[in-house]
Image (cartoon, rainbow, N blue to C red; front, side, top):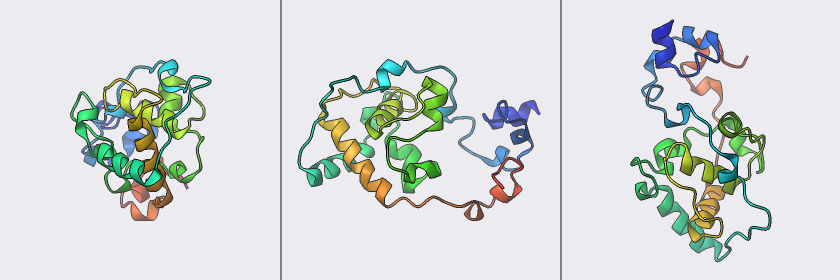
Length: 174
């Protein structure tokens, strides 16, 4: 069981996950930066009251946001947003819902029950990307938010039928 828990960071919280035959096949499990232990100070990720987010030409912000989404220079560890989310990957089905909405990673790491999109971007800057949050009124945050809204519009949650391991996963939703 210890080897399965090491291969699957969810195993400690979900004992049946250790028996998941696909857990050992997950190449990201051991290196998943989102699974790292530790808490994130909610003051860093919750938009301060009275904050005015930058606004501008949406088409330009989307274009800049797409470039930033792929830019590893935003992080201190060589990651970009696209590292985790290439091809719309690693979004929970809830990503399709309008913000603010619950995000398990934000709840687990900061105790934040519901996040706005810009707050989730700040969270990702800190946790997987190991960087400082962006200034709340920055063009970068506005651009990443604008681009992610476009990604969200085209997002279609993947059903378990498309995941060959889901059928073998004793923890999968039934």
